[in-house]
Image 1 (cartoon, rainbow, N blue to C red):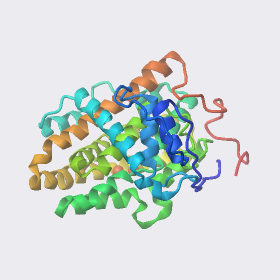
Image 2: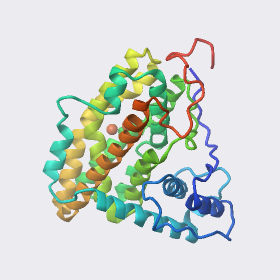
Image 3: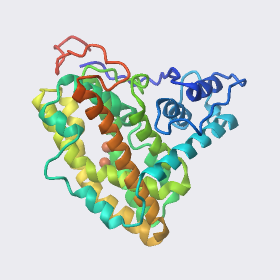
Image 4: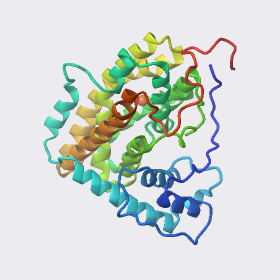
Length: 346
Ligand SMILES: [Fe+2]
Ligand SMILES: [Fe+2]
């Protein structure tokens, strides 16, 4: 098993076009930037999503070389606001909308008779290099697992607030650092022979996963989108147990390190409870108090599904089915065994 890294060293990743280059320049202290044309950029594209990701990162742990005060830099905030507007407009255009929450929740709990998707592919036919790529993609979220949901707390009241914090308490290890889900994921990465450093794979991970993480930050940082944030969080908890169960089967089939399996067994158990709390106590109470947020909650659910579908399309259908890497460049050592030889590292 690789050593688990707790380092916080993160460099600003290389630009992917004019927007991320402008953000890069501002982060480096250069005030003479070429203001990019954001409104005609691809709202799901590499350039916009890396740029947006890097603006948001300033609200999380940030970059080693960038002063913490840049979080509130007016020019960066202006660029960020224009990117957010462009992204959110595309999302509103691409989901059906509406206020039928019961129908949306029903769709989430109804698994198609024949499960499909990435976890089913990994369960039945995926190889070890697929698993490693999947971990690298998801690491962009799991390194900050559950962090964006905390922004909902000051915006909620009553039972919804108490219950959301109860779920977050579990996500953050119930008072034990070694049980924090982000830590369990770092151990999963190490168990898979991957680098567990914070956002280590940012340069390799393409836009479909960055868009998912950016969606969480967008919802989290805007009080006006608190309904969407809760809708998104509920979607994650409701859909997690069956997907996690398939991942457990995939990893056992490939004889993966126990640390890899543990992350998903933990989620099979915890999320079965979280699902109930999110539905009954968080969504139920929130919408009793603020029924006008129903459309926002539905929007959060639909956007999560849209971006997960786009992620699956990119990873599984456009690349893995064509025997290609789904990352911007393949991971080193694709033939590494599921269980690294004892004593090889550590
Ligand atoms: Fe979790
Ligand atoms: Fe959970």
